[in-house]
Every structure is written in C-alpha cells, then in structure tokens.
Amino acid sequence: MFDGLKDKLSSFREDAAEEVEEKAAEAESVEAESADAPRAEGAEAEAADRGDAAPAAEPAGSGADAPAVGEDEDATAAEEAAEDDGSAASTFRRAKAFATGKVIIEEEDLEEPLRNLEFALLESDVEVSVAEEIVDAVRERMLGESRAQIETTDELVTEALHDALLDVISVGQFDFEERVAAADKPVTIVFTGVNGVGKTTTIAKLSEWLEARGYSSVLANGDTYRAGANEQIREHAEALDRRLIAHEKGGDPAAVVYDGIEYAEANDVDVVLGDTAGRLHTSNDLMAQLEKIDRVVDPDLTLFVDESVAGQDAVRRAKEFDDAAAIDGVVLTKADADSSGGAAISIAYVTGKPILFLGTGQGYGDLARFDPEALVDELLDEE
Ligand SMILES: Nc1nc2c(ncn2[C@@H]2O[C@H](COP(=O)(O)OP(=O)(O)OP(=O)(O)O)[C@@H](O)[C@H]2O)c(=O)[nH]1
Image (tube, rainbow, N blue to C red):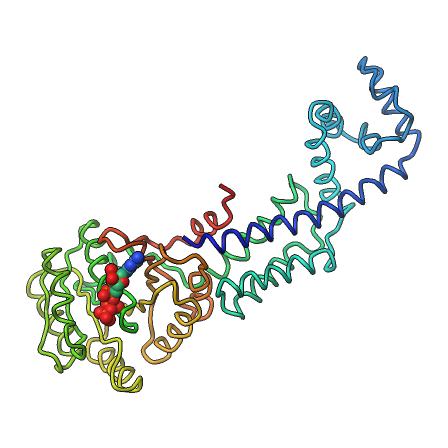
C-alpha cells in the first residue's frame, strides 16, 4: 500500500539529510582549523592522564576531535567511541554542532531537496495545495534548526516530515466507534459516491465491522436508479445474513432509507446502512436526490466512498459531494491497489472531513480503521 509514495519520501529524507550533513561537515572542518592550541594541549594532558598515548602523539589541533575534548564528558565519550567507530563519533559531533547552535539550517540548504519533495508529492497525486502545505511545514520546521536532542540528521528530517504529514492527514479526525456508541439507536449512516468505486461492498464490510463490535445492522438500498442494484446488494445481505430493505427500481430513495429506519426501530437493530445512487441523468439530479435524503432522513452520518486509486479525481469528487450534501467522513477503497497514496494524503485537508476507513481488499474483513499516526509511521518506515 502506497509503496511509490513511501519510496519518494525516503529519497527526500536521504537528499535532505545529505545536504545538512554536508553543511555540518563543513562547519566541523572550519571549527577544527580554528581550534585554539591551549585547549588542545589541555586535551592532550587529559588524555595522557588517562594513560591514553594515541591522542597525545598527534600534533595539537590536528584533528576535529581536539576542541571537543575537555568541553564536557559527552565529548570525551565521543572521542573514545571514535576509536571503535569513527563514523558514530563523527555523527555525534555533527549533532552536537546543531545542539550548540554552531550549524543553522538555511533556506538555500533545503531549496533543492524541497523542490524535489514537491515534485514527488505532485507525482504521487497529492493535491497541489496539500503538497505546498507539506513542503512549507517541513521548511518551517527545519529552518534555523539548532535544537538540542538531535541524534542524527535523518532524525531531524524524518521528524519534520512526520509532523507535516500528520498535520494534513489528521484534519477532522474523530472516533467513529465512539460516535456510533454515543448516538441514539438506530444510527443512520448514508453512503454517497459515484458508481463502481466499491460503495456497496463497503456497506457490507462495515456491517461486518459493526457486527464484530456488537452492533446489529440492516441494509437499505437507496440506489433505485440502476438496474441490478437490488440484486447486487442482496447478494451481500444474503452472504452476511442481514436484512435488506429495498423498493422497486425507480422508487424514492429517501423512502427506502426511511423504511430501513422504521424496520430498525421495530426490531431493535442498532444501525441502518443506506446505499444511494452513484449516477443519475445529470449530476444536478443526483445532488438534488442526496439533498432530499438528507432532508427526509436526517442521517446521523453521511460517508463519502471513493477509490484511493482515483487520486485527485477522488479529492475533487469528495469536495463536490460535500458541497451538495455535507459529508461527515470518507472511506477510501482499494487502498491495497494504490501505490501513490495521493488521495489518502489530500482528502481530509481539502474537504476538512476525515478519512475514517480504508478498504484493503475484496473480502468482508478487508476494512481498516484509518489511523493517521500509523499511516505516517508506515510511510516513513525504512523497512
Ligand atoms: N481490491 C479491492 N477491491 C475492492 C475494494 N472495495 C471494493 N472492491 C471491488 O470493487 C468492485 C466494485 O465494488 P462495488 O461495491 O460493486 O462498487 P459500487 O460503488 O457499489 O458500485 P455500484 O454498485 O456500481 O455503484 C468490486 O469488484 C469489489 O470487490 C477494496 O478495498 N479493494
């Protein structure tokens, strides 16, 4: 899932860390050149006291380690470590250069990696305003950086990217299960979205997801427009042993969902899951129908379903559906088949409505609660 995006983020981290490392290495060599002799002599004396002949044999001020020694205990420890592992000590010194403010990251250091990051995000179908937001946030977090506690430059870059991604992905998040638990029963959830994206399958999956958490549900087919819609949802209802409320083709979708609610009330069913049409003669008809369902049924939640693989088209449609009949959240299907992840990154930021679930396969169990923190960790995981 989202492997292409993951690779691109990894390249950015390498590029940016390299730029910053280069800068730190430059600062390190300048510092070594200007190291003052008395302190270096002190270092030699200290090393000699410890019976460590090797550093004393070196001319004063010849190594980058010299000024650091004697500054504090950590620096001495770093020098000792250098005997075993030169690169670890060098990383330590560079981190120390940041921590003490000797190296400050400037705009020009990040210019190229950030330009590449923006291209990479756009290539991954991230919506343009979202890509800009991420790049700006990474720049802001890294510029002028001279914090203590930095262990490696990769950590610095990764943290900046982690925070920037999390900020855009987690817009509007709420706990779906808690919302269902707290609402008066029956809870009515209406699903919108265009044909063929996996809406009906998602309704069946969510019915299973709710069942596993102790909530019964009834399916209501508000897609009275498309021939075959009743048969399609009936197959799922029969496979899951759920009750289906359906009317003849051409019937009033709001009336079907309304009947679903009446059935749920009469039979102590917790949740009504209402399907809707994904296409009518014109998109105006479709939106008018959704508005009517909204008015007549007043659902507790309206979820917009689209496929992750649709990228920016999914983002645009989410916005259109939200404008017509306010949505409360999004389900992105076919995330298992999506390498770029642009819709998953962009939808919440563009619409202000959270992604609540990801469809991760064709089976009824293939529905995963969307967890922004886990997704960002996964995107930045090196394994
Ligand atoms: N790989 C994968 N396939 C999925 C997922 N969700 C749905 N599908 C498949 O997508 C196809 C379309 O799903 P439907 O549920 O029929 O789509 P729909 O939006 O209801 O379509 P209409 O009923 O035509 O409006 C089916 O073959 C599903 O099995 C998913 O998360 N991953």
